[in-house]
Length: 230
Image (cartoon, rainbow, N blue to C red; front, side):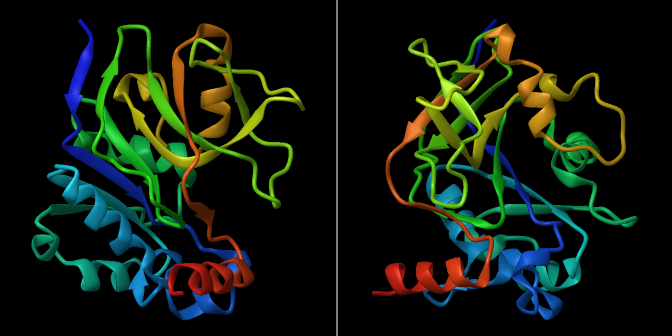
């Protein structure tokens, strides 16, 4: 049976240290850095709530208490926020998701990197067929990632990238918990898990051609503020 409908649960990845953003992230967790006066993570929460999402799970490690104090239980956004504490340090992307699976449930969920900014609309009715494990948002390669991450075939599924057709993963997607069924708890990255599925035609994609920024350096944060705040 296909898994379809409006997604009502999301996870925001917010546990990273943000080394390239230092010294800003010495005292402020990266998802709490502001764009046009609003923390990055609040941009996500507001857009998720507007799209009908009800529950958001946020994983925490570096300065996680700052995030938890600021967002509390999420009622101010019309959301229920739950926290997945990574007490032994950040578990990277896949590791953080695996730890949070008991909170996420069995249905597909939105996954959002806490350190990206985008005008992507989460108001999508998403259908994952039986053989589909995820559907990712891809963007045209930015200057800092000219080689891209994946390619999207004419059938809408990810495939091995080539120089002529590569795109960059936007840090946004819909994931089935089934993708992580064989993962063991512990530190693990998401990219190898996705790449292992490329020959299976199990990872679909959208190509988003709107605004997007990976806020990975102080300079990119400055430029984004100049663009969005203008």
